[in-house]
Length: 145
Image (cartoon, rainbow, N blue to C red; front, side, top):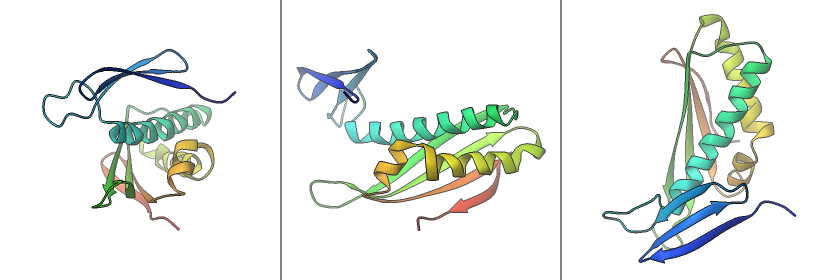
C-alpha cells in the first residue's frame, strides 16, 4: 500500500488531518480567523519541505555544512474554479562557506530534477521554476523546460 492520510471534520470548514505516519495538521478554509492552513497552502509547504530535505541530505553526503537554510514557495492560480496552480516559484536560500556554493546549486538541481516526488508531480500540472541563493546572492536560476 502507498501513502495514507485522514481528514476528520471538526466544524465549519475546519478539518484535523492526520498523516499515515501519525502526524497532525490543522486545516481550515475560513478566510478570516481560520484555525489552520488552507489545503492548497499545504501543497506548497510539502514541496518546500520535500526538496529542502533532499538538499539538506545531499549537502550532508557531500560533507558540506550550512549555517542556515530555508525554502520558500509561491504559486499562481487560475482565476476560475477549480483554482489550480499554473506556476510555482521555489527559492533555496542557504548560508555558509563560500566554497560550498557550487555544492548547494548541485544539491538543489538533483532534488528538483531527480529526487523530490512532490516536485515531479507538480511539474506535471504547473510551470515550476527555482532560484538558488547562497550568502544572500542569487547564484542560479532555473525556469521550467
